[in-house]
Length: 410
Image (cartoon, rainbow, N blue to C red; front, side):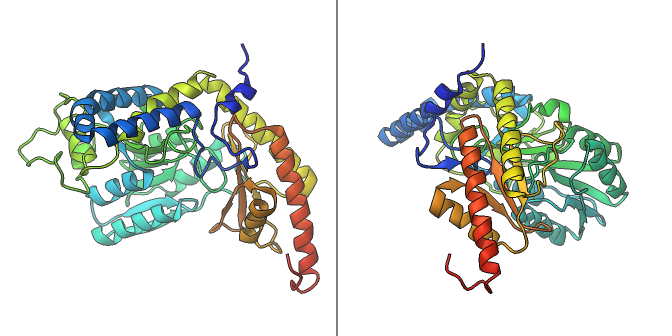
């Protein structure tokens, strides 16, 4: 039975005046997830000690198990985090690497992650090297071949995004991790866009560390993230913070017995970071089950269908060049367009919001600025057409202003 996308959209908390095309930055909440989160926070406000001390352990353990099942891994290898930035920083700061050597990153990594690894390299006496990815690859093999040429005997860590935040390109994560492992290189994957964007199976990918977000495509609350760790390298990782989960060197960090929260001694050491709001974690099962009610594969297919339609509309109406390949193994629910050199990209985004209430993202730091558009199941073809029409109008205005020395008011 086909999913009822009209009903699905009505189940979301959406501003009816906004065309929300930016789940790649943060996804809006389904009503059921918001209600679950609100109920948990009310209980936390009413009786914080009862909530944190007596109710939370079983709820956290259940959330961990549900998330592990969804992402294709073992709960005992899954540490709950507040965001991908904190998860990657934990690895970059807590992992001791052999020196001399290098840390390899692609040229499409999120700027704070680049800074994070730059600091780690400086502290440990390593160098940072950038892998230039192929522009508009026609198939995953092009990306793999570029990585194979870059991985060398000095490479200690290979850090890459599962889905590039710049263009929405889906990287061949399993093949990249296999290649790195064969050369003795650790892999750390930025999976900020992974959960719900791709059919994620971490056990199959075979990375050493994978940091993923819940607040983007999974439509879970802000402050839901995770760090997935393989069992071969986790004992080399030191926590960023010493809190109640920390133990002495005498503790057996390889023990697999779990506490009431579903944490092994190692997970407890990495996960416990003082008092904080755990309610977003506890709403994860509701977010997973919400999209599951329409079928996760059907949701991804819907995202892809809308992205293809939007690509066609923008290309035909505005003549913008897409920076995202059409190959089904390289793309999904995000498509990026090159912003012409004569257009102020930040100003374009501002005008799309202020004049048309269209929410998109602009990416800087690439060869040319990119307008990145995200399509989730709750979006519509009408919203794609609305964006294309608005872009056509604004690009024409920008061209006219450029032809008049740029001094005409917007």
